[in-house]
Length: 118
Image (cartoon, rainbow, N blue to C red):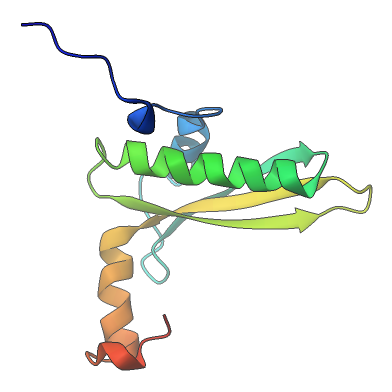
């Protein structure tokens, strides 16, 4: 029996930025910084408005979700929107090794989850 098409809520939306996320890992040669868990920082240049920069940020987060279905170890994404002197916006982002991040939080804040920063 043939399968139904993918439901709308599972379809990829907007621009797929998998290559940009993977570039962060590739520039670090697949090795994260042992102190921070970060891979290399990548900059997406030239967003005309803050709204466009925020959309790029959402696209990066969506790609992380889809990539984590295939990647091992899993990654997280950290983004920062930076306004430039010419009025445009850049999005600085990097991938983070989630195994490192999950180990860092209890080591730093203790095992009592009510005292964690988030």
